[in-house]
Length: 518
Image (cartoon, rainbow, N blue to C red; front, side, top):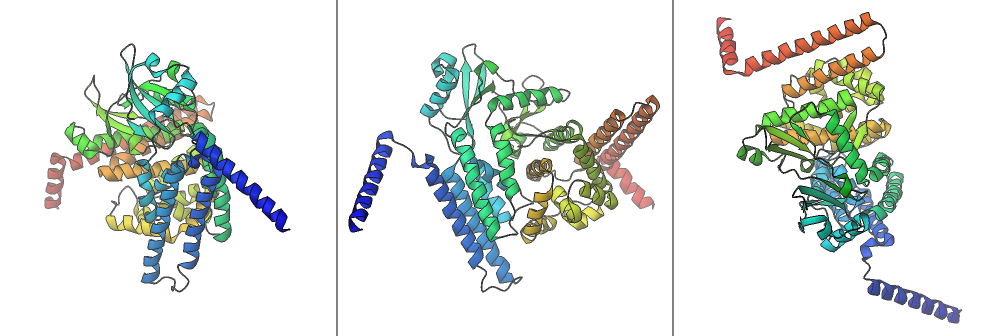
């Protein structure tokens, strides 16, 4: 037996030694090994789970000390998760960014901590970028470009963007995928699935499998840059009637599944108030235009850009017209909304704006919320149930209400988790998109503005009328639908004019005079 053990240990030593020699000679990055990535993720998951299992053993539920400790556990767990994402990079950062965008669905400790992942994405070296270009385009950088900036304009979880100049003098942005992401993504998603199932077994209330399902469906699409290029052309044609929207033109001859070359567009991030002030751009105008773009996408077209974080939405003065313009970037992730889903979503928002609580319940249930429809309405609007009942278009957002919503996100996490698992998959990306847009509005101080509700209402009216016309062959009914649509749009325009007069100097004067006379 001792001899066998000696032989076995000698063989194991030889295997480990030869493995170490191979790794040294090939200069293999240990981070590329699936075993290392899985081990790191499993270790962090174990530590976080153990922390939640043991931290509250001797703490009475509901006391101030309990909630203070829970906040600390949330914070340190979020920091461990952030560090894991930074270490494993790629798909882990992408999923971490997704979680960081769910402001009103996850505890604030998590979203605030994970938000930094947008600015902590890894960068590939110049040699790695050259290798991808050489493999995909079959040429060296000097053959394709007059100059190619080594320092990227920006780096994200899946790719980075370089500024370059073509031989004909045109300036372009070259988006190049990190070389290892494609190979690692499917394995990383499998790792996440295994670990999330383990966590769900330990904590039955923790049901975040929808996160893995979304990653499985969306990651292959986001890693295909040709798909992104086609999406950008679709949305450019679809919203061509908005002169203030700029979608960079794709250079197809210099694009592949891992490389996307497009027209270079400069501008400041949409949440950069100082940039807008310096360039004479009206914050309210930008917020209204962004609302028009997304209302059209969601309610009328059913083809929605689902990653509007500030780095993907730029603002600038148009070089030709000198008018404010929005530049929409990163078209890898779109959600196609089915007609029935879209109509119910339209009717739900109409009910929310009109304070029609019967309609809120009815259409929330149709969208899959069931008895959790009050929670769903609060998540969708990021408003308290009191504000939803009072009318979200008439009750302003207060800081105390915002704190209440964030506190409830931690308090009702099991119910939120259950709700997200029962909602249609189409709704999940819409909720993320809503939260990202709401974050931009909060930064610009334009949240819950009357113009955004008016734009939404206008698109809902048009979408429902278009849907009704498509369902009937009768000319008389079509005419009736069109007349009703025109009348409702006219009423909305009159209401908008009333609000404008009320807010103008003349309107305020007349309003004051009216008050004095009465």
